[in-house]
Length: 196
Image (cartoon, rainbow, N blue to C red; front, side, top):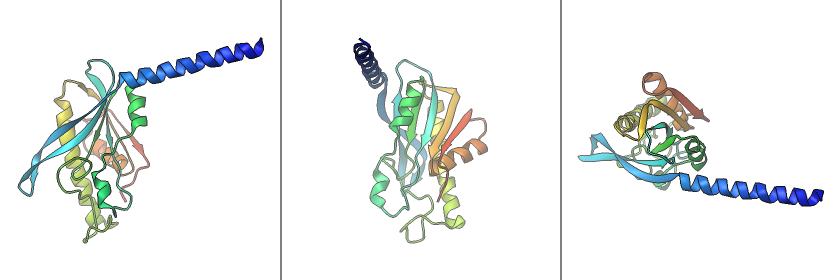
């Protein structure tokens, strides 16, 4: 009887886990938006791709802006076109009622423009020279400015409850952004911070 009780308990637990997994999949909607930029590169207007994970409900939602990292050493330009998201982060925050957005900076994912966040002169890899890498941080900050401006006008977003986060290069960007624009976000979450 003890083993029957354990098996029944295991079936109930498995059933609950499966139903929760199904609920999470149903409760989350993913879509992509184009964030217009005010800047022009090579006489062309530039827009940024932003991948959005929306929880169930109508909002406005507290919002996490999650910034992507680098592409390793910067040696493989084909990787620049891969959109960076993190489903674990999105699911964690969506389950708690947060909207999660993954902006792709210029030249990354489906964003327009040149990816130029601090390369060597021949663009063969990322540069470790502050003279070349620091302008890359400024460039990334400009992109994040556009994303924030877009989100503050979005009725889905509770602009009084926004946090910024990211991994690696995106983690550093999040900390610098929160520190230099202190009235924008109520917090910053960083994973494995570093620019180079």
